[in-house]
Amino acid sequence: MEYTNIQAKKYIIVGLISFIVVILLFAEAFAGDARIIYPRFGINAIRHSTDTLTVRFNPIPDSFQIFNGNFIGKWYKTNNTSDILLHLQNYKEGIYSIRYVGQSTVKIERHAIVIKNHNNYNDYLRLIFITDTHIGYRHTTEKLRKWIKIINYENPDIVVFGGDNIEYQNSEYMETFTDLANKINAPLFIISGNHEHHNIFKLPLKDALFKKTIQSFDHYHISLYPLSFYLMDSRNDNLPIPSRCKGPLKSTVYWADTLLASDTMPFKIFVMHGPPRDPSEYNQQNNDLVMNVAKNNGVNFILCGHTHVSAIYDNDMIKHDKIEKKYEPLVVQTGTACKTFMPFAVIREMDFYFETDSLNDKLIYLNEK
Image (cartoon, rainbow, N blue to C red; front, side, top):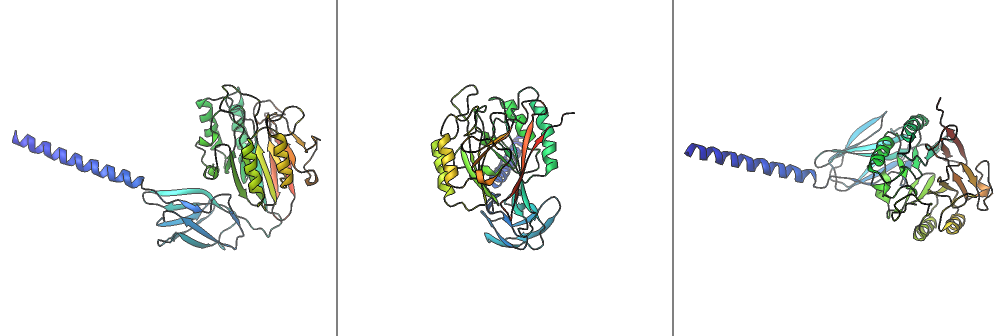
């Protein structure tokens, strides 16, 4: 009996020690690993390849490294300094991530630094705008799979989803859309449309680093030279079924108006699901306010979808065949990417050049042969 009691006490002591060790490991894992405070993707991120760059952490990690698929830089020791100055002369043009050793594990901040040579006239930033995928409706999932292959082949710098990404409020559709979007090899910006009655920003998208810049659930601003994006959500949580697109709130438009006053980017872009100008169907609210703020602040384009038709309109609802700056602000609509059959399934590709105010714009159609 005495031997049994001794054994029981040993088991209890061992159990308590194991429990304490687990608690300590758990506490360490959640003690607040380091994170990058600056630079954030899209916020003054593009640099000359001969520039220096300051990287700021909080809390301070032990060391960090810059890398991408073709290049792995050396490890930098932080030496308990929050601001670390990097010399980028040996870094080629590209989009770089930062890998760093925190308190408990190795962390990666995706696409934290973008390096492009502004002195090269041919340098450009490629944007792909895809909208109205309506995942959950018939054949849309398979179509998005095909689009992702095309998008990755086009090698964009940014991909923007313009709303109605899923068909209804359905967790299965949301999961499918998230899994597919995560296969895109570029950072993602995204807004909701009138078919989505959920907060799209909560989706676990791997490169959706815009989440760190959101002011509220329905709008956020990101600059990535030479572009400045104002993304304004159009979802309506109060309706059980899809409705007409309500458009951005007045407070959201005034928010954009305030920021635009000090915006010096060459291209300023509104992104919203429904068009503020269209002869068939436009937003339910604040259309004139959107256009007036855009015109008064030099907004170049308003990217939108909703009508499943590709078209370009000016403020007087005059249709144009191509984008010309003299007619700005231009409403640039893009047709549905998935909720139709060829030859109408479409995405829009726009190349913005650094040293000029020019751009190339084209529609890419889905070939389903």
